[in-house]
Image: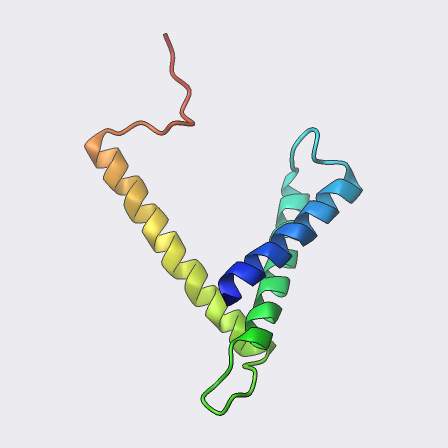
Amino acid sequence: LAAFIGFIVALLATFVIQLATGTLQYGLTWPLFILLLVVAFILQSGVYGLIIKDAEGHPLGFGKGALVFLIQLVIGTIILVALGLLFAVLGVHSPWQMQTP
């Protein structure tokens, strides 16, 4: 539940920032991408810190919420890299890869 709510909050915030900067039409620049990444990290860490409780029923706080998010990010990155390597070894083409006739 915490991951879903954190994702929705970060998604809405980045959408509002893109809407305010007018980048929904033509795409992201690297500085804006880094800004959106930092905003999403801060928001999702805060949501994790508020929603996830410790053994005594107290919220974890922002620091431990950030640690939870970083662990989630590392595990997700490992899974994506492993899948990418698996697809590369098996010769599976990405659906986003440009096919030349």
